[in-house]
Amino acid sequence: MSETTSNKKVPAKKVADKKVATTANGVQLFVSPTVSAIFWTIAFLIVGAVIFGNYYYTTNNVSESNLARLIRVLIVILGFVIALVVALLTNKGRTLVQFARQSYTELKKVVWPTRQEAVQTTFIVFVAVCIVSLFLYLCDIVFLQVVRLFTL
Image 1 (cartoon, one colour):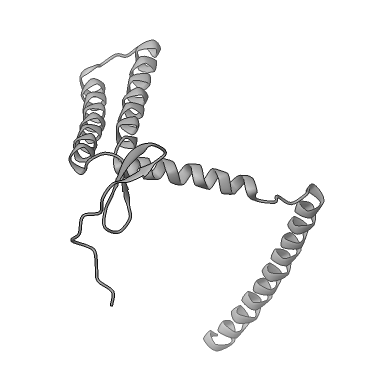
Image 2 (tube, helix red, strand yellow):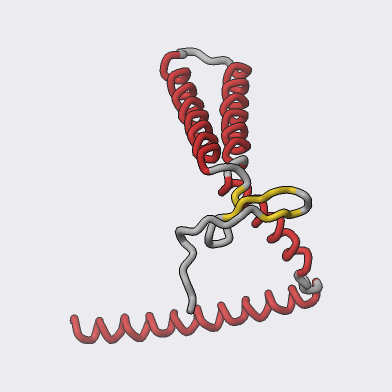
C-alpha cells in the first residue's frame, strides 16, 4: 500500500556536512519559506522603487545632461541587479541557479558538429527551403488562376 506524504514532515538530510530541509515531495529548501517570502518582497520593492524613481525623475527633470542620463541608467541597472541577487537568495532562485549549473554541465557534454557538417547541413536546409518555396509559389499561381476563372 502506498500512502501520500503530502502532510508529513520529512526530516532534514545531511548533505556535505550541511543540514538541508526538504519538503514531503523531495524539494530542497535552502531557507525557510518565511525568509524566502521576505526576500521576494524585498526584491519586488526594489524593482518597484527603481521603476518609480526612474519615472519620477524623468517626469520632473526638464533638462538632463548626458552624464546625468548615464548615471540614471546605471542606477536603474544596479537596482535591477540588486533585486535579482535578492531574488536568487530565495528557494526558487537557488533552484534556478542549480538548474543553470546543471544545464551548463550538460551543454559541455554536447558533441558539436564540425565546420564541414555545419556547412553541409546548412546547404541541405537552404535547398529544401528553395524547393518548398518554389512549390508554394506554383500553388499560389495555380490557385490565383482558378480564382480568376471562377470570378471573371
